[in-house]
Image (cartoon, rainbow over all chains, first blue to last red; front, side, top):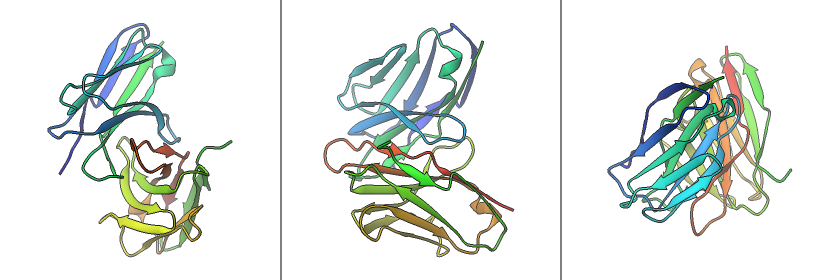
Length: 111
Length: 114
């Protein structure tokens, strides 16, 4: 069974600080997606990473896919209150359609 | 708006009642998924359609749950004889087949069973 573990589960920091969220597995994924979800809304896709070692940047967010395609990280520089939300990673595994989901990291940025 | 839409956004019902939710996927997407999400958790897969064919159902989907996609476009999820444990956010997503599996989500339907 393929699993994705996210850490930390919860993070509360001050505006302007940096943070990193991790998504780890013992399984290989052909791609991995990061989503952000706000309360009462559906997840919104942030990025998809496909190649081992790939780094993608989205403004202050930097996403990295591990060389072995078993893990990923999300780094936020100079966090802002607008970054508050639930960050979810989801991996495309053995099934050709079903994504394997992490439980999410709840991030709160205090002004 | 060409995104995934869901209706209703919120539903409050009494235990034992039936409820039906609708999902309209992105028009060119022929894959459609239903998920259930409880507070602070990731989405749990319920079922999956490719066009009108329901190709996979999770063990989470009891006999009280049924989903249809009759013309390969919109889909409905019905819950019969609702229970308090059915209270959750029900999410719909769609995707294009082939290549990387990237799913686009609707805003969800939040169900509260009293």
